[in-house]
Image (tube, rainbow, N blue to C red; front, side, top):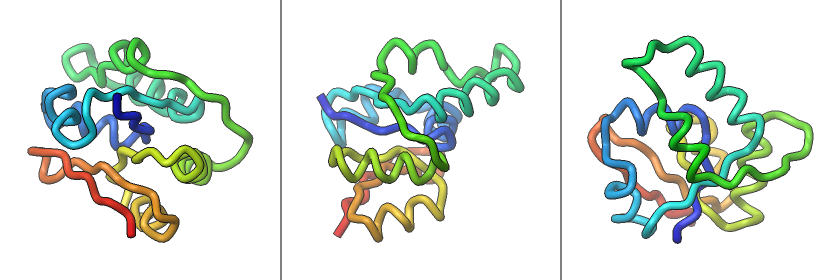
Length: 124
């Protein structure tokens, strides 16, 4: 299985793109397994509460297929970057600043492109 660390904006972009999650991720990392930080789960819960039932972010699916890992205190982006780097797993995000920081730290990024497909950008 291919572990993928989830950033809130990346998950929302993936869901809003309407892609088949398994197929899209399997093409680039193999069968996906999601890794979730508690602070990201909090962000996603707030986002879900603001959406209606027809515009769900499929939070239950994410929870069923995720491992929630412990985190230290700090800014969510810092925690995501540290976890991805230490565990050598890609980060699903569309946040431009976070992607830049990933590249600077040799962390692979999975991004949603043009709401049509996923792309793995391997770090240098």
